[in-house]
Amino acid sequence: MSRIAFLWLLMSFLWLGSIVAQNLPDSLDAKLSGKSPKEQVAYLSKIANNILKSNSNAAFELAKTANAIAVKNGDKNGEYQSAVIAGKAARYAGKANEGISYLNNAINIVVQTNNKQTLAAIYNELGLSCRDAKKYNDAIAAYNKSISLYEELGDNKNAYLATNNLGAIYVKSGQAKQAIDLFTKAKSLAEKMGDKNEIASVTYQLGVAYANYGNNNEALRYFNAAKEMAHSQNMSALLASIEQSVTSLQENLAHKTKTTYEQEQEQEKEKMV
Image (tube, rainbow, N blue to C red; front, side, top):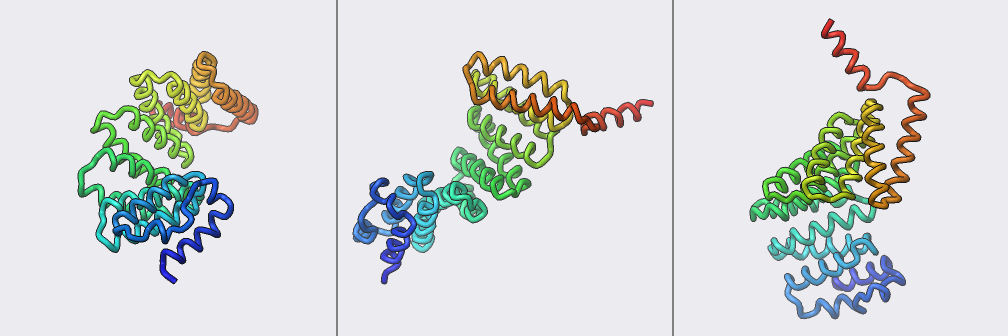
């Protein structure tokens, strides 16, 4: 049995009844027959990309196969593109750790072309995968590289998104002070873009970061500001999150212990004595 025939049998089990709904070919053998290796890579990558979210496991297998063909035939363009799709598919399938090596390989290829826009996007995707794999230090490094490239390109929108992602990593990894710095920067970028929804969202994230840091007054100030913006923009989901965060903050205050912020303030006072 040929590799393609075996792959098709494997895909049949993975896709089951969803094959017809996704309008996939009856036989990969027939579709790939007569195509050059480069065309095979492009075809498999296209299918994988089309089912990236609807059938992530199948997309991952297809992208890996496309990548193997590209590597074997020295197709660098197809190799990096299929590697990025494999990285995304792995993350969507809940196995981000398996996609990280593909994303790093894609970066190694694109670095040589000096395509900064593409490189910035892959670094951001690598950050997302490292985040999901709980490799927070690697995620921070990837996001910083993405942000630096987007800033160099003057791409405020994507710089904002990557900065916001980095702030969220700092919150998740318990580094609230760094999160405050990043969300403050993200808020400035959102204001430059004039995106009211994003301004409201990142203002709320600042409140969360301040709450985690233990500066409750600042947390409430940002929560209230975000609430006012969310009301004016009819952002019901954000309003619900704000209400939940305010309730949690009030409950924490009722069982108050010294926060990181308060401990740092006491240390500063002691230095001044």
